[in-house]
Image (cartoon, rainbow, N blue to C red; front, top):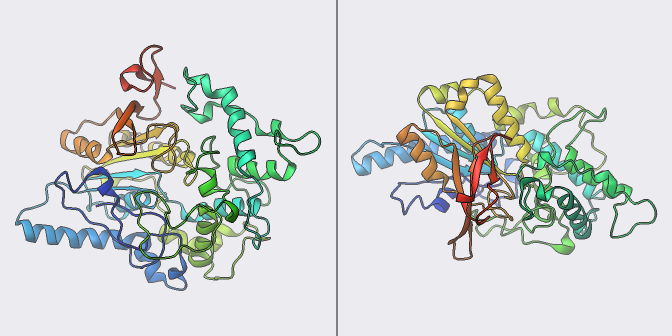
Length: 438
């Protein structure tokens, strides 16, 4: 089974990107119980049944029904069942393992959306900073010139840390560049940030906070500031530079539905979650809103939607295996959140390392794309693991050309190890790298 993206709204099956059908699998997807553009959440207004379907029930019921149809048609028991998904689909993978542990033998969760309510806070505070006047969506406070300034500045300091100058940070947490050094000392120029711009940038990197300065969620690490699939698509944008939101993201169909007016994807997601999942008020606005009571306000929605529980024991007990992956340059779901969840899983039960693996992909944006090699056939990887019982310590990621043919490769090591260039050989050949402790 393949997952969906955004708020879903049409039948999506992203396992097809891993050639599930050509590989001989029976495969299925779901619209999660409603029909709309994946950036439109208005279907959930005062409709808890639809929210529950979207949150977890639709994937389960679809899986159960599909299995019955497959067994009846082929007159055989299913040998193994897998779920692969990224973004919302990654969240669906983890929800399935937690709530319905018997549905799948292995799940692949990429760039998952599992903490919807805190993602809403993150998006809303970024929207407040980038578009302080919600009636003026033409251009964000931080524009393309400032984004290029930030990226070029930290790359100048940190790009060579991994032994290669290629515009890719192996682990952006190791880059200690301080964006406050870019604050203008005098009048604003293209070589510095105004106070308002620096404040907005720090919301992105530091993450959302309440009025007392307490952290509410993860920020974003360095990465994706200048790419079409990075800040400009997810965090900044602007109607002046409008990217076609009807394209949404690769592998996710939008049907014939029109995207809501939105200068960035986070603008749509933040408002959508707040208006229709949390407050059930289509007129809700982030303007002058504070988040001091948000945990209480969002409790009902969190119970339905969130999948942050680190206890995978029921899934693991019946032999379930889980692969987690994320791009370090993902500007839709912070790679720090992916690392945080995995570390919580191991802190809860260190033996979970036998059945879960995390792969952090340098230079990769949301699900795929970016300067790093972004294609790994994770369906093949989860199948090999389930069939052999041998957990993958590394996978091979490929750069692909427009014809989807490989043009280079690098290893991606199981977290916390990282791929290190051996100092000789082609830097676009996986054999030139070794996995080492960070």
